Image (tube, rainbow, N blue to C red; front, side, top):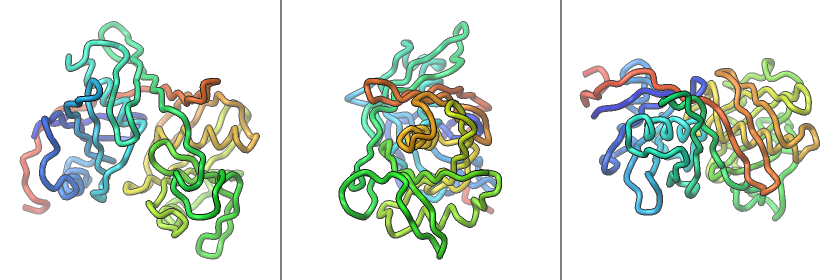
Length: 280
């Protein structure tokens, strides 16, 4: 299995072009993503043919679960598709588990420098996120986690996000709190978790615990969710620069109610997976 190792702000992926997803992709993802016995990655991404769009993207987390969408992965896929000659246009249609999304490529010569992705409209209705509780939006709502109380805002971009504003993201014990919130019974499909520090109305700092992956250096949908939550809570404007451990994304919640994410993607190396079991 030939692959390309890519990353968006350090959120890294094993990207595979294929006609179809192989059997037992959950098992394959767990092995390939293992950082000691495999290639090592935050996700295994398949670039597939699509009957509805220019291509289809499916992504499997290190725990074997499938993610509906990933903002950093779609930027990597768009870069790969253009630079490999799969698609030779600067506005692509990519079929994902969250619907068809449109990455727009910004070129430097023949190379993709940055990618702007129309992430669509944020989903704010509680039941559609999904989160248990009465109908309506979840904005600055109290959530008790292992005896601690947090004010949360819930947003979905095809995958669920629980956003929590704090005074200092560096002080958050992400490894302890992340999995507890991810698996909180209020979220029937688990959730991604973002801790957000507002620096000023145009700039925020975010640390992310990704559902199925754990702490990552960046999360595109998480950055979008954090930006939307900031605006909903009156803490930021509708255009913000989002600082993540791996770098910065620019997020714009436009007048058409669509959220646009702009950031880089990078190819690191190409390789071949030989199919041996861990320790074999």
